[in-house]
Amino acid sequence: MSPAAEAYPAWRFYPARSRAPDWVDAIVDAFSAVQTKIDSRVKSGVSSDTALAALRPTLVEAGFEIEAGKTAAGKIRRPVLFGERGHPRVAYEVDGFHAELGIVLEIEAGRGAAGNADYRDLVRTSLIVDADYLVLGMMLEYRSGKTTLRSYERTRDQIDAIFASDRLKLPFKGILLIGY
Image 1 (tube, rainbow, N blue to C red):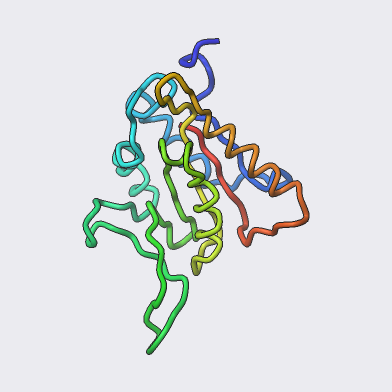
Image 2 (cartoon, rainbow, N blue to C red; image 1 turned 180 degrees about the horizontal axis):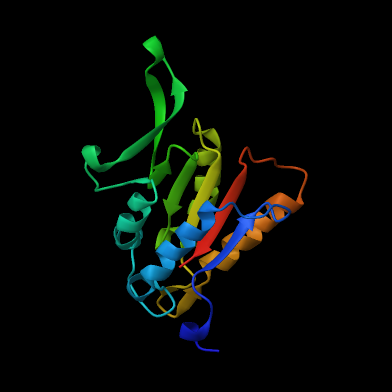
């Protein structure tokens, strides 16, 4: 089957024993709507910024605050620890946040495939105040030279292992892993 004929985007909701919440459809639809711009199986050089920019209008319409640029004003910072007078002392930058539903959004590209950004996103989001869900976008294919990394599949296998094991408990109501 050719990449264009496979269902797009790939996605899985965790824990597998839970039905995906209604909001998942809107996110999957947002990825579907921009497939021609971000489908990593057929588009080379798609960065996380490119993917996020393509997704931004639909996700904002769905209630997300989405990173608008690399300047401080365009960044989204979510608190982790509070200090003097209740001001955030430690905060992490995220790609998007839905305040009403408590959803942190992270979109990864090449670094996500090669540099374990999926682990970083899982741990950091676990520490963010008011984070009930994580939406983690990973490339279906990342090509570097003659090597093709399937970061969505790799991350799926890692999250499957986390949820199958009793050794690590994540503090989320759920995780939506989506492959673009």
